[in-house]
Length: 421
Image (cartoon, rainbow, N blue to C red):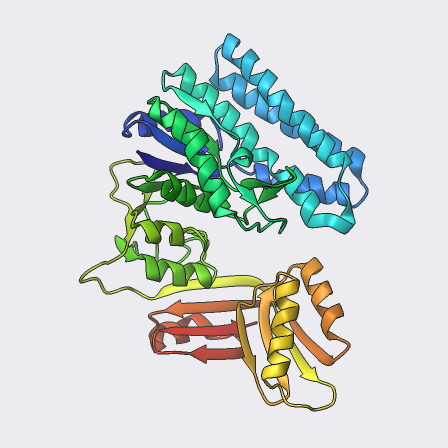
């Protein structure tokens, strides 16, 4: 048994979904299929929750109606008349859930409201995909990932209760697989003990696939993308990228930690723990070799691995009474960042100041400033970028930072990080 994960780009149009049939038909059955929302649906749902939280609920409901119509038209393009009617009835359950979630939005509980709305995208796409595959003769059972993955209440970046979720995966998905039928479920989502929907962080579908592989004893995980494999940098931003044929779990974890969007930061751990290889392959051309990620890769010299995180904020907190930034101060600062669930992408401290580079999320930054300004004088640079290069050379570093203002730079033997504007 293997796990296949399909992202939004792979099912962006009905033609794209039809193009996946040979990929699935050629896989060893049964399969576990983990699927994202259609195309830009998550972005559309984010617009809906943002409008609702601004009090523009009529606008939010209209945007939801537009999204409903797009999904119905998508399903109608794929399915015969009888299967479309059945799928439309199933989709209507989640259209109703979306409308209820809009009514329930609360700007003071933005992350909670976000998850109740945004989770709908994966539920809709997988219902359509399941109906299509059944119509094409690939026997599968649709499962709601919220019945499998129990989490805490850290909305938008929930922590999975592994023991409970593993038991549910084996009970629900395992029973289907034993019958020789494939499983189709959603990436990215789960639920709390009180049945509130949660999301696992952006790109969390990869994490879902990895967890299911580990929980169900899969032989491999394949992430199907619209690129030929992992590149050493984002080809949309950097010219002349290099494809990586094989890479270790360790290197991918480093890349993910520094912000690379190809593989979710939490994806690798469950695979490494069970020594399950992860393949990144192109759904547009199954003949391409792709990239394999595994424990050991012999005789391979990595090119510079480049990650550039934009829309960052560099915050400097200086003690008002000129007291040193000691272990006590650092512990207090870490506690504040932890309580606000803010990841520090880069940090440095001097005698009386602490500097942190973080994602520029307005709600998080506002709360951080409120928590710090009582004891610290705050300075910040907005709209900066954090460039990280693994296996860097001085030539590459110079080329990527020339004509830019360096605000902060840190180096080790293998890695350099630079905050620029």
